[in-house]
Length: 263
Image (cartoon, rainbow, N blue to C red; front, side, top):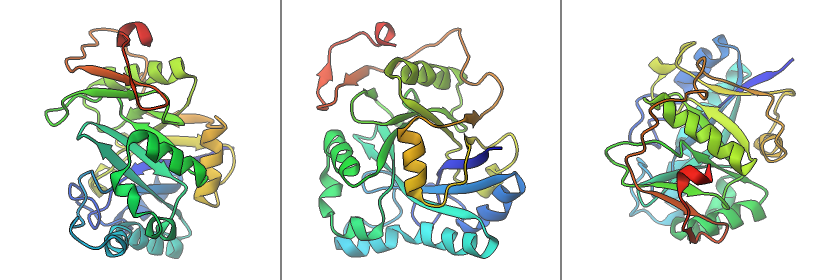
């Protein structure tokens, strides 16, 4: 027996690009057999819906509203809702952060000024984990691909909103090269996306009671499997990467390596 979890989801209260309230997702995911979701709204340097001019604690309170609204509905329906976020660096590379909470954020206003390395070290020190989201995505708003090899615990190898199958195939090879745990997520922004073919997720052999449980399974490479479209990560073909690729080490320094040779 295994349990299915959504790892990447946005709400209208906290992500400027989302269209649905967290509460709208609960029944839909339950009907598809999911055991829980992680709300990962866009954080301070991402496409946040919360004004950055607010004092830090007020910003955090506003940011957490999307999760809290979803959690309230999840509690009513007996469905697990966990807290995380998605931070962006230089408008290019994105990271899902799990394992911390609102009270921790209150005490760490420096989070809005972190480098990739500082983010990773602080999150790990607090018992959390960092997952690089859709690392090979190419889009008009992205000007380079960053492979953060030393500042992540896992790689999102399949993202339901990637419009090129090769992005996921390359991400899978990247995760395998690093021998890291891998996840799949829907990157859900709209409840209309939640149907059998529109959502991804991860399978875990035991039920998660806290976000800390999920962190432990990811960091110990205990993911039992991923829910994705058939063949999503197995593509071999015209894998064009038209953006510059930067590879960074555990100190967040650039490594001068050819990415094709690297993965």
